[in-house]
Length: 130
Image 1 (cartoon, rainbow, N blue to C red):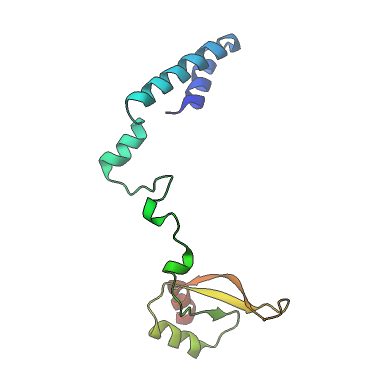
Image 2: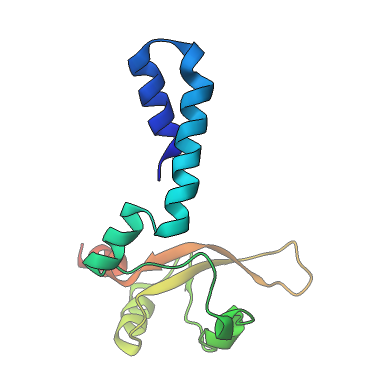
C-alpha cells in the first residue's frame, strides 16, 4: 500500500495544500484498516504468480547460521597477475562459478591475503579465449 505516493498524487490533483492533512489522515486510516484484513495487492500478486520471495526475517532454524557453517573450506583464489596455465588448470579442476581475486596484504603481520574482488568463471573463459 503506497500511502505517500497516493497522498502526493491526490494533493497535486486538488492543487491545494489545505487538503493535505485530511487526505493524508484518510489514506493512512484506509491503509491501517486494509492491513488488518489482508495483505497488500503487490504481496498477493507475488504469492499468486509464485515468484521467489525472501521474507524480512530468516527462518528460525537459520537465525544463528554463520558463513563458516556453509562455505567451502578449500577456497580457490586467483592472484592479480596469474599465468594462463594456472587459470586453465583452475577452470578444469573446479566447478566453482566465481573466484576471489586476492593480493598479499603487506600491512598485516601474518601477511594475510587481501580480497580485491571476485572474477566469474565466464569472465575468465572470455579472457582466455582472446
